[in-house]
Image (cartoon, rainbow, N blue to C red; front, side, top):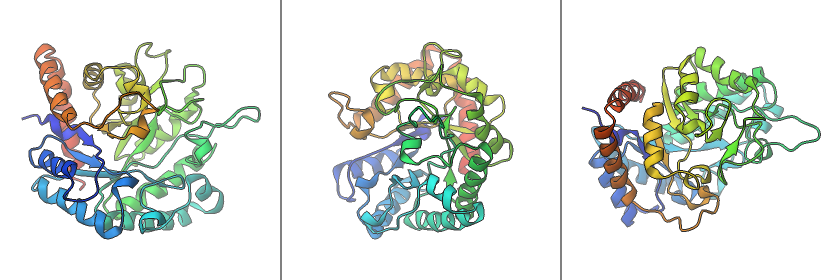
Amino acid sequence: MINVGSRLILGFSGYSPEDEDLRQIRDYLRENLIGGVILFAYNIHSPQQVTELIQGFYEASFPNKPLIALDQEGGRVQRLSSKNGFHDFLSAKQIALSLTPQQAYEKYKAMATIIKAAGFNLNFGPVVDLEYEKPSGQPCPVIGALERSYGTDVEDVILYAQAFVEAHRQQGVLTSLKHYPGHGFAAYDSHKGLVDITNTYRTMEELPFRELIQEGWADMVMVAHLMNRQIDDNYPASLSPAILKKLRAYYDGVTVSDDLHMGAIIQNFSLEDVLQQTLRAGMDLLVFSNNSKATGGAKDFQQSFALVDKIHRIISELRQKHQELEECLKVSDERLTKLKKKL
C-alpha cells in the first residue's frame, strides 16, 4: 500500500520535547503522516538537547525509520556550529583552496561523525554547483558569494564531492547532491523568487551530477527551483516533468525537492499546483521547511501544521482525478524503500 506521508519532510520551530509543535511532529511520525523532519539552527541549542530531541523522533516512528535531516555544508551553511556547542567547519571553497581531496575527506569524516552522534541520518550536501567565473560579473548570490561551491573546475568539484559523500557513508549518513540542474551560474537567489536560468545555464553545469551519479556517489539528488524555458516554459525544475525526465535518463534513484516554502515557489504557485506537478514529475521527497526566512519575505507566511492534513487531502483528491499518478507513486515508493535500506 502506498504511503503518501513517507515522502514529506517537515520543518518546525521548537526545540524542547515539551513544545506543542514537537508533540505534533511526534504524532505525525507515529501515524506515518510524514516521513521525516529537517532541523535548522533555531532547533539546536546544545549537543545533549538535539540528541534527546532526535531520539524522541526515532521512538515515535518505531519500527519505521524516519529521515532526520539538516544542511551541514560548512562555512555559511552549518546548523551544527560553535554557536550551539559543536565545531565550525570550512566552507566548500576554503576546503578546495587549502586541502587536498584526501585531507578534505578527513575533515568531512569528523563532520559526519558529529552529525551521526547527534542522531541525524541525512545531510543535504554536498553542493556540486560550479562557481561562476566572470571578471566583469558577480557570483551567484546564494552559491559563489557564500563560498558554497568547490570551484570552477568540474573535476575538482567531483573529487571534493566524493570526499564529502564517502566520509558520510562511512558513518551511515545519507547525502544529497545539489542543486540540480545547477545553481552556480544563476544571477539570483531562489529563496527570494523564481530564478530564470534560460540564458545563463551551461551544459557543463550538469557534468558533476552526471559523473557522480554514474560512478555511484548519489544517495539522492536535490532539484532546484530554476526555470529553463528552453525545456519547460511554465515550471521550474523542481515541478517540471520535462526537466526531471532529462535527469531520469541517467538516474533512477531518489530525488528530493529544494525547500517548497522558498520564495520561488510560494510566491508563484498554489499548493495544489505544487503537489500535482511534483507527483507528475516523479519527485520522491518533498521538503516543507516551515521556515519564514526561506520565503524571501513573503507576506502573511505563517508556520502551520494544518499543512500536513491539507497535503494529504489534496493528494488524495489528485489520485482520484488522475489515475496515471498511481504509477508515479508506485515507482517513487520503490525508490524510497530502496533508499531506506541504506539506513
